[in-house]
Length: 205
Image (cartoon, rainbow, N blue to C red; front, side, top):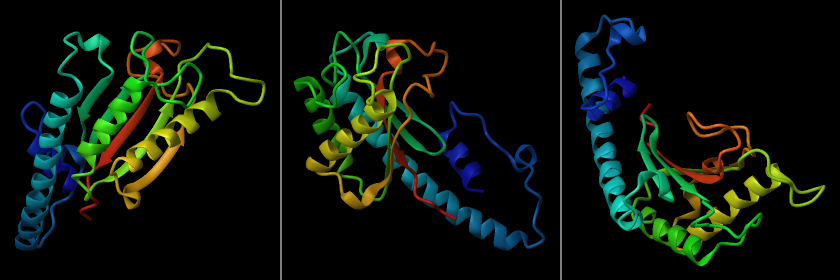
């Protein structure tokens, strides 16, 4: 029911998901189902409207100076789970110092600006993921992509928290090395070097 409500709130451009195509059997207590679904729909719609507003605010704050989408440092995507924010560590506009968890001045600005926006919406849980591209040499024999991606995710957590994100919002901080490339991108593509911030919709069960 929650997924159906979310998909309906997203339309257009998202297609509707019905009871038939998700395999949900009708309940004999139709009145109860109608009342409960109405409550869930209302809650989901409110949360989604908040995410849409945040999405627009972030677009204005972080992408206003970059017209070419392929060169942007920040990519935003509304999903059925919430708002996914990818922050790319591009060579022409790095967020981190090379093979390091130290932020560049630009990276510091990106994450502090992001923190300022996120701190206004404390009802959402936050997950952080660090990712790398495949093929570059490790920092040392005992410090490779797993360590770097995890430490960058934690560096992002500290920076966001330093600038206003509440500590109780964190649900996950993890590093995935080069195991989850961006969709339709080869594992060695630079675009895979990123930190992903997932703003999760509250559990409405």
